[in-house]
Length: 457
Image 1 (spheres, one colour):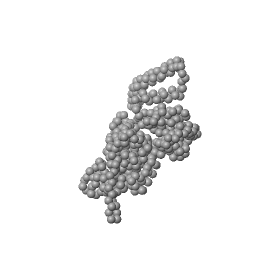
Image 2: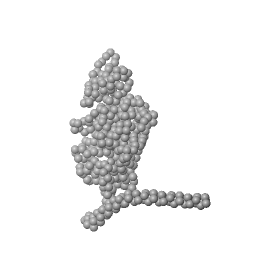
Image 3: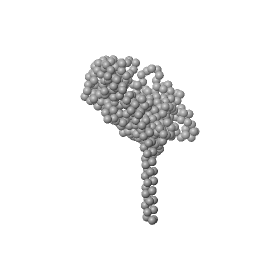
Image 4: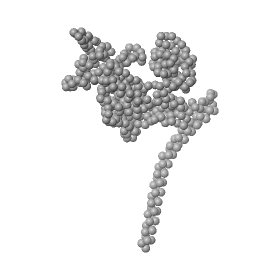
């Protein structure tokens, strides 16, 4: 009898379990069905509309349809339609070029250009070991035609695109040298390297590092620059991020890590408000005063670099308020035809949990570029008013760091700037807000002392 009860109970339990499992499965399947059907219907509607347009156009359009171009335009339109202002669609050619840029290599003639009031493409940079360099093209010269076409109707981006191409292919340019002489050159495109970091020592003891972008070459070049300037006795470091639109986030984080004390650097906040730590720094850092030079075109990873140095290392931001792109984009997703898509995946939060998206970073010291209409893109750093302003701030910070008197009196950096400049600026190079320096020299028995006075610092 007991054995029969046990078997009955077992069968009952099995039936109940099967019933519960079936019920749960049916509920889940129904929920999945309910969520899938609208999605399927939406996609069906989208594809049907596209097919309807395609059918009508192919039946009635007078011209020829280039399917490759059409597919790319559909890709552009889809990304535009999602409303993500920082999303991008790259054609196969554009994506291959993007990879070349990120790896520091390009195919072309080796120049950077901008458009000015003349309408021509003025050369602002000639890269070493490039076809343009070998040919003797000069900074300040102009490209007037490309393969016989006038450049006056082209944007700077279009000019750059036409100059680039596969290695070994030819491009013919009309060229006007800075002295006004003209010539026509046929150039074979080839690979050339584009540095992402350049540096030098200013006023004998203040390190200046220009970071053009954060790409695959930046970290090693950046490390070399910082190490070299330190070994040469730099009293402070200035980082120029003007017109740096960002780049690879992990590269920017690694560069920040070299400079700041231990701590969290950047977080990603997803659309549900969940925060994820993306990068942190170890306990090694550079114990020098730091200044970051920024402007309205400083964006994304470059803004993170500036914000992190200010929050974690006490750096001063000099120049103009930044762009305000504080979002994180995905790595390019390569499609089967070689094209690629980039999407915004999260908001970027700095070490203190704040966001600069949409607002940008407010600078600590305003420094306007020349407003007299003169050309500033070819001005060397020694004559660049914003660089010289940053140099003045760096000198003040270095002086405040080493001065016991200023520390004891409790004066702020701004309040002690005049007193410090008299002691520190013995190299006869101080920076005024209007870019002018007044110098008085007094001869004494066997030595001369230069006293510099900073106006309006």
